[in-house]
Length: 188
Ligand SMILES: Nc1nc2c(ncn2[C@@H]2O[C@H](COP(=O)(O)OP(=O)(O)OP(=O)(O)O)[C@@H](O)[C@H]2O)c(=O)[nH]1
Ligand SMILES: [Mg+2]
Image (tube, rainbow, N blue to C red; front, side, top):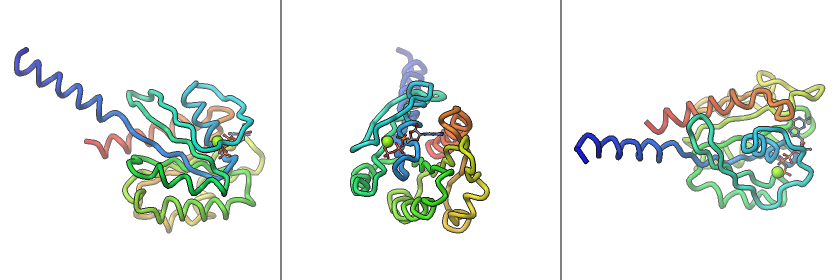
């Protein structure tokens, strides 16, 4: 093989390698993490009856990337298990049920403890999904940012909040495109 040929083979393998990312999906129980994961994996909404116990690990292709998602159990008594997945996380998705106003303070506390104050998450892009926008009374991103104080707490971090409804498949793709762009800019 010529020098140019072997260089381009090497470059291709490097590029392929770089187009992989481990993404941790966090959030309270019933926020929609597993529904999101299945939507990305199978391309459609599936009614997910069972709360997660432990975690679901899925791999799927998106915009030329191989994304491995770790969708954890959100119930309070399982949250200690999240720690095992922090090392090597390249991006975090925090899913919020934006129609469940009563639990927004809890979502904020969990976000603060497990993402904002987590040394493993210091330089990873943070995608916050304001999910369940199809439900009446769902809080939209600008208000959610105010209510959770994200404009203050995350001002030095790479983050974005996207409105979405996994049920209707709205806003999900756009949010993942933002994440991919952030990953691209970190890897090159
Ligand atoms: N209306 C509506 N319901 C949704 C949406 N996304 C998820 N759900 C529903 O919310 C419920 C909880 O979804 P899950 O995906 O199991 O939530 P989870 O965050 O994985 O919960 P844990 O596994 O307990 O941490 C299910 O009944 C879903 O069908 C959405 O965009 N709109
Ligand atoms: Mg789940």
